[in-house]
Image 1: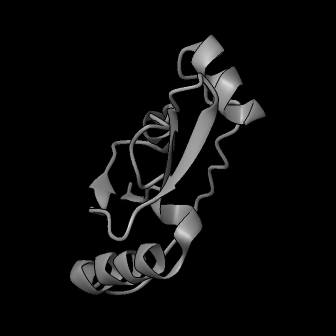
Image 2: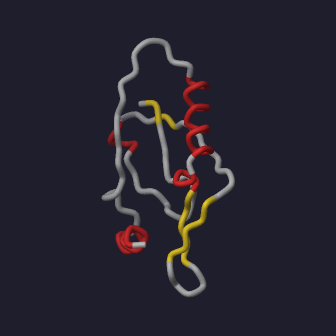
Length: 97
């Protein structure tokens, strides 16, 4: 609840983002990597969660049955870190840099 309220007040800050960078070596099967992330999102409710303001003005957590996930591409790790829209699932992203 606190994170949702703070995100609304800060207008999309990145203070609660948890970025990580992994360096991959060798050949990459992009399709297989993307499918692996899709399976993670499908398996874990926290990755299929979004938040909205309920009729009483209180934040409400929504767990979606399924959400669309797409592996992004970014020019740099710095360009990849950006605010999440908490009203849209998944609250998880991955990119090839």
